[in-house]
Amino acid sequence: MRIGINGQVLFIDEIEKTGPVTYLKNLLIGISKIDNKSSYSVYLSSKINKDSFEEFKSQFPDNFNFKVLEVKPSWMQVSLAKELFQNPVDIFFTSTHSIPFLLNPKVKVVSMIHGLEYKTNKQYINSPIMALIHPLIISWVLKFSKKIITPSNATKDAILKSFNIQEEKINVIHEGVSSDFYKRTISEITAVRKKYKLEDFKYLLFVSTIQPRKNIPKMIEAFAKALKENPKLKNIKLVIAGKNGWMYEESLNSPSKFGVSENVIFTGPISSEDLPVLFSGAIAFVSCSLEEGFGLPLLESLACETPAMVSDIPSFREIGEDKVIYIDPNNTESIKNGFLEIVSNPLTKNLEGLARKYTWEKTAKETLQIMKDL
Image (tube, rainbow, N blue to C red; front, side, top):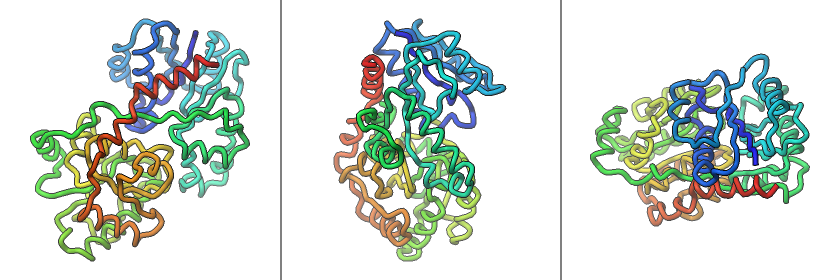
């Protein structure tokens, strides 16, 4: 069987540390370990960072072929479409919510839809054109895909509510957590805290790209109220780790706006090696996100035995079950109370056991089976 995989998001510096990239890299690695019979073509953008690409490529067997396609005039609609006509595959897998409009009819499409977060993103809500185009693109992908994969029942339900699609066409395959995420030693934690200048205080940790959907201004406002209500928390910092995404300015200005500049720290991006250590050293992982397709940072925090306070949204409920503290992300008072509770009475039992149900090996095996069954 010949399988083509959309690798457009891989090895592009500005999007390298995002959930979709983490997902695709781990999926490829997982599949390469269990299938040495099929032939794989992974299609990449000519914008790749060649050093990181070569390092990644070196771990794959001979049945994996990486093809670099030109970005101009259009990577997806021209270069990839042309490639799939000239060198057709049996299955084309995409996890970027897009496919060529002119698609080789002999190619069967399997698509991964991470989530419908665009519905809560100001980037789309405030732009009539984007609000129209994005769902049309997803609708096109759903229509021409033989199978749809979602990372959670929450995303599956959202698709069924928003689009006219048969339920049996959708398969839920959860994402996984890397074995790199586990509780680290005090010496490791001390060294990494020093590296990011997070010494001499306790901290709560938020991890994600800074964008409106993550609801960071309201989280900071609620944190300010918690500090005011309980002065004993004054030595606790809220550490926000992640790169700036779109419309990030309001988030960066919020500590000053709410008078907690001394208690909120933006670290910028965190290396993949340091992230498990920072999770391990935190009082808790916190997220007031308005919408998530899955919630990989929550899963990673639980694997590191770190308590969590997160939004009461379906995807987080699916992962955290009854092992985390939930808040209403639209209610500042609820978030404030969540901060006070997670500091004074965190839930700590069987967090790692909950996380270990999710593995990238399982993700790869179930995804490959979907392709082989077509």
